[in-house]
Image 1 (spheres, protein in one colour):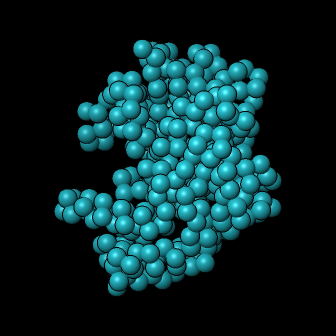
Image 2: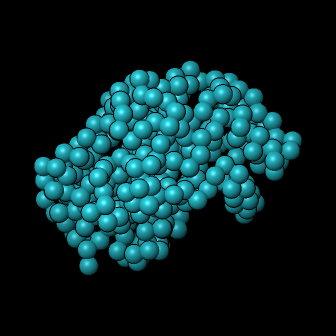
Length: 319
Ligand code: SER
């Protein structure tokens, strides 16, 4: 039985992608891997786990060979704010890690999913309804690694026939795992603070509009793009996908519909504000819609309602 490998399995996306893949393809068909030595808590009970550092090609090769892997979801990466703080580490993890995965995929004929991002765009990109094919001159190390990653995946598809596919993810909102140092993290933190303290101090300006998505939609997109009929795909890599666009003040208002006393104030972090100001306000996802039938299920009101009720239950259970 050929298997599916998820790198970065303990991260923000991996923690939800692994259970979704196991529910769909079977527990033992999905190998979780991460740079962390031991999976936390119950994770160890949930299915096969391998410690692997994607910057060490022999570790990736060993896992792929031993488990007869046919598809890799390469989620191991540094997010935008951390990458700006440690650009050299970000290049090593985000680029060398991807290169190592693609090289082993070439040798063992694996398909590869690569998560690109709204960060792959920059200040010279059209910012509203950003087209699928447009100017990509990002000004962050995170963005540089995402554009280069998109191109490297295209190269491996063209030159070696590797089935590389990917999407450009917007900011992701989830009640399961916390984000790890992104510019869009405020849209997760705000829910924790709303439920715990009834107020939140936001690190972006109130009018900063960014593209966002609820995690269940993002997970479904990652599964659907890899299952899509290749004959229908004109693009392979880095499909724009979107679900909603909002500013911190609009999100605060949506939360107030459920928690009327909720208050927000602002202490702008200049680094993350500059990153956000270089990104699109909204994406045009028509290529994903027409080539593989993409459609988001959650808009802002639906996401806010579900997020508040699920997170409330989680916080109460943890008490
Ligand atoms: N959510 C990511 C970040 O803020 C964007 O891809 O870094």
